[in-house]
Length: 554
Image 1: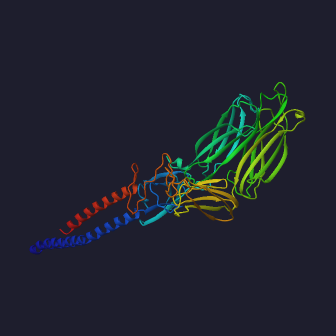
Image 2: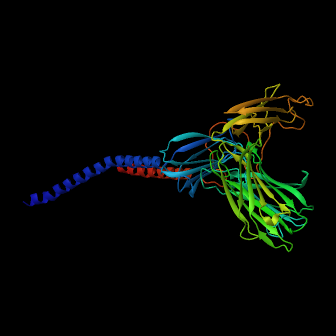
Image 3: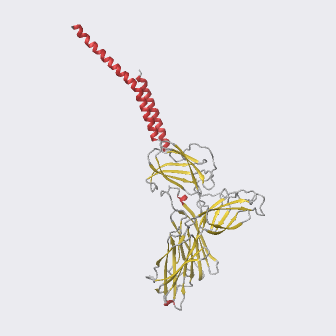
């Protein structure tokens, strides 16, 4: 019995050892599976976190040529129109290449705002969501220049600097003031990246000319502004007349921005009388701040014409009595045909110094260029037998046709057929300059328009074209007789016109091939940073898993 009792503990120890050996064998077989499972999960997580890889190429829409030196900015936005941003994701420049390549940080479904900037081209914007799965995509964006740029100018006023709402008199400074509207409008995305405001601004020259009754220019002055899209630039001039008499003051805008391939002037005008001294025992009227809204209308759209007026009778003591104003509105087209006319008596102002606002509606039934002319004159028995000076304001106003047409000029050398860049083209009231392939585009209303094409070293050519749809006008210029045999290039002239926009990137040539680009200096590529972190973690996990795997077989 003692022997049997002593053998039972030995049998129990053998059973425990066998169980432990079986469990150890199970773990040995499980460890490779655990390792493979960890590796699979991590690799899957890597692909889940990786967003799409995009390669963006840039081209000139008009010529098809590749573009270099393009800035590319990418933001996450609070909404689809990027009214505010969450963070900046990419800040790249293509440098000497015509593309950029980048990776999205994750596949999370976010609103993105993409911005592309190139000197002398309109900003290119794109708003979208991205939720890719690590795929690779290639896109091409076409950058373009604006056609038929114009800057409406209105609210032109001429005032006596010493006496409120009295006529201008000699030897006293006259203040001349107007509002110029930006030629750029209708932004796709609301957010404008800091430091890139110039790309959204139209460089515009505003010129004042004052002419006497004989048509001689007695005063001129110009100012240039960068007018941000959808904004208005107030401009002020001063002039001190030396002589009394009838004068015309004309203020006009000319968009000179290289982001526009064609443009046309807009103007506002005042016809007024300069008195030898303050008015006494006479009537006078002042009409100022003529404007028409909306500033960029389309035919059959109601246009509201606004201005202010004041009419007074001034007695011998300079005391003023307000009197009614006879207002005449006349609207003529580009051929001076009268298309609308009306007259009405406007009641007297509430006092002798505060102008009264007047509003009149007009609906143009066709597109085109129009002159809106408002003339005011005092209407009172107090003016009988006395001087009664009228005042006139004129506004140049452009109305788009419902169907605008695209007119393309293609200019070439008549002897070599080589396309000519830098040729000046006048089409109706518009002007433009041909690009590197000898082309320039205009937006046009229907009608018949005269045109003129010129370039240094060539004979000028003129013609007339009727526009009833999209049209291409090919013009061959003959080298001038005094040309030096350089195929139309005059001495010292360049074969093409190169634009330069201060503080903007410039062309540095086109380079082909595809390669991954680094962010420009100062930028941070979060996507690549995240990839390196994930790769480092992957290597670490693989090492740990291999160690566990090897130990499991020991």
